Amino acid sequence: MVDFARVQKELQECNRDFEVSGIKVMPKSDANLAHLLGTIPGPLGTPYEGGSFKIDINLPGTLLISLGFCTFQYLRDYPTFMGTARYWTEAFAMTSSLGVEDKVLKLVEMGFPDALVRSTLASVDGDENMALEKLCSG
View 1: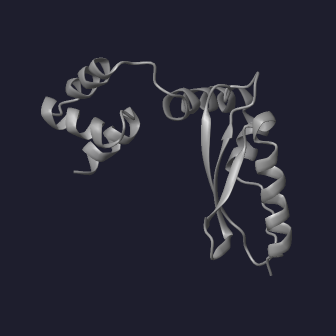
View 2: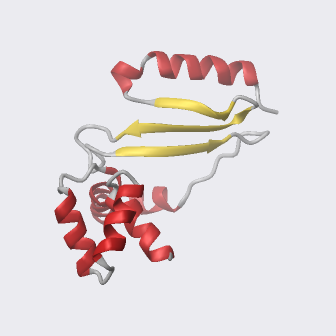
């Protein structure tokens, strides 16, 4: 069973230190402290540096501990793990420095119509990755 008093305490501590840590976590809804959303910055000196990562936490009734694929790859093939981490950070977690016209050109070169690209970019506040996802999903 989730200790909701502990969750509230941890949320307060986490958000109190936001200026230092850059970590922000909040309940998805006021009625459900077992489902949390937040963001964490990529640690300095790692391939994740400069990225801002969204987290979605579902607290189970009991604590589950397992070693996932990332842990396995980190231990067995560190150079590949670091390269993959760097690529995903640059591709998906860093704010693009491209201007609107550069983003439009890039997406139009992928075969999408100019007008559709512009309206899609506008609907996602210029987020190139979100625009591409929307364009690909029809």
